[in-house]
Length: 478
Image 1: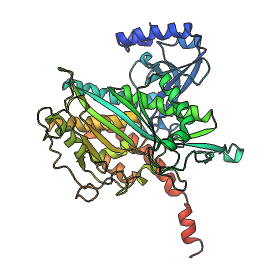
Image 2: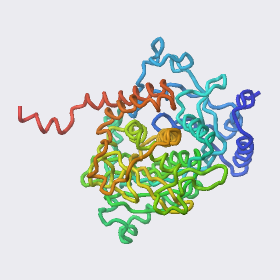
Image 3: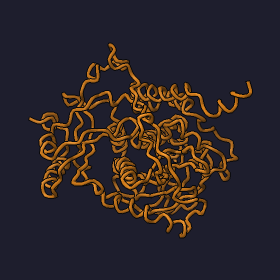
Image 4: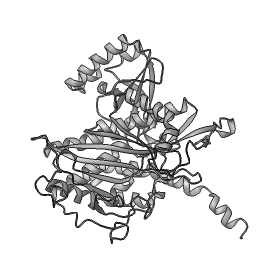
């Protein structure tokens, strides 16, 4: 029997989707299928198989090295994987042993920009059918199951900012290779500052349309296309979906944008604040609400009580987000660069505060009656692993429900209100994550240690570099 059938790893819906996937591969003349999984950073990795092999391993999974789970953002291995114990103490991963990435056939897509190519999102398993513990998609799925046991489904809508530049020099000389390599040189597509003006939109419309056609061809629930305030900056928004759907959508969207752009002489980046003159920070605002599974209604909606921002469940959820905001920061803003964004009077938060329809607040409460009542968390960066970002919200919100937490009064002037500051650096955020026991309980103490070790490796490399600032400051002075 197959890995799937021996260990009961698929639902009935996934078995049905697998049959539909196989039929489509044959009917559409798909020649290759990319089997990918989202790693600890939310970056997709995996292997491409020819169609016949893809069909043969659909229920068996594809072998890849476990060392992929121990890479930092420079693709350097942050653990001594060939030493005894490997630094993680997991026998199944000793010596970069293989794991199996098993497809979730409900995620299958045909890539509109690649010739005769399919794509499917996978989850890592050991050969004996046990899930690999560092799979962030599974961690979110487990958190969602806990929420369902309380009678709710998590619903999220995406509002994602990013930059697209014209690539002027690819920097592909041998001296440009490295870990990381030298990025391409770029120039602007627009000067920016003319926020939401039609003239600026029309200037970049060919690029926007290129992205729109490909994103919609993937079946992603795109809602709006916008030119953001900064030069060469865009914002795409997506309709709310429940469960894993929009976390999966974010993984696919980022990959689509970057791949379509690189095929067309462009460079797209979801880096928060590129080091380029006059460039503005990009954020990822996560709109969230709960669906009451018994009634199918929005559990945040305070229908009949217009003076209340949200129903009781929404206010307690908000209280949980407030209580764990500092600990969750490393999961929503996991790069060194992301903390450059937390500045006062910048449309980005700098402290833990909520406000009623106030874009200066970290948590913007939108108390519209009916299905639209929601909380917008403005703390995230677009480079975040979506499964960890979502999980941080679900675990925090559930704690708010369990303890009926009160978020306190909303802030009318969030940049002036007395409130705890958000972490000022990734290092500070990792300390806050370790100190908040909720996340060790919800994600596992081993996962928190693992995550912090990988991020600490990035910080150590950063601190070992001599910056331009240091050279300018001290080279002549002393």
